[in-house]
Length: 299
Image 1 (spheres, helix red, strand yellow):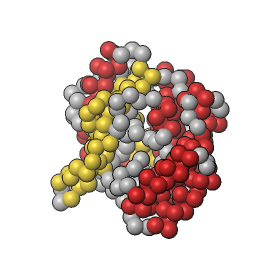
Image 2: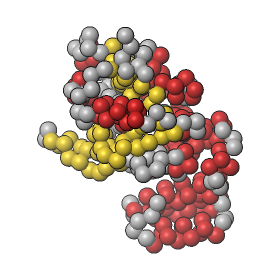
Image 3: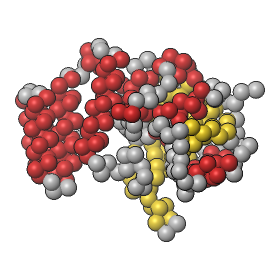
Image 4: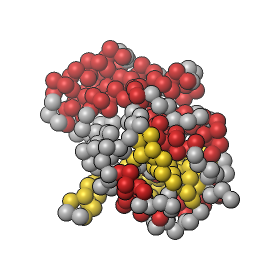
């Protein structure tokens, strides 16, 4: 008999963290699940750490190809009615699956459910919470165009989403935002809901693909790549979502400029503001630049 939930974990050079991640799944109050982990060409002791959990988990190996290719291999070998994503260094609270399965059963119209997550660092064996992420009030595709507010390790989707939207995009141009592009693809055809409580802990560490957003220009470039791929798939997205494309791209550049300003890098900020104006010269773009320049908070 097939499990209700397939837990999908891609793992790359995570020997220090993956055991705690898997243990957080094995400690779930909800028990009808399978765990599928793909070692994505690790060069450390990740595979040995994974093997220590067999047969409670299924382990697959492949040459390094990025998180999307690892998740896709796991999905192709899964059989659950629901698919839950978990990164190899994150942690679930002990009733995460129970709450989301119950939500799906009481909201059969939903295709994707996520929650808030707490970002933490580990210092001296103690977990120190830095912030809570995940916008859950009224999640829509339109809002996703302005930024990814869905923490990957909190997501659960129906199998029908994969059947309809396909697997994740394995392009190397989308590594670190392959999940963002996937949420937009799913949101184009399915309703989403967010649970307004933290059901996962997101580990901040040097090896994270996006870290704490330290690489501002990389974050901007990847966000634009994910949105551009969505636009390629759904050319009418701007009309459907009632979003002005040029103003959106201007806003993304201003957001990056504001981040540079907060770091005291005024020249870099100005460069991003000028790039915003090359996207759109609408008066509101000028107002956004002024606001980003003089205010302490802007988004």
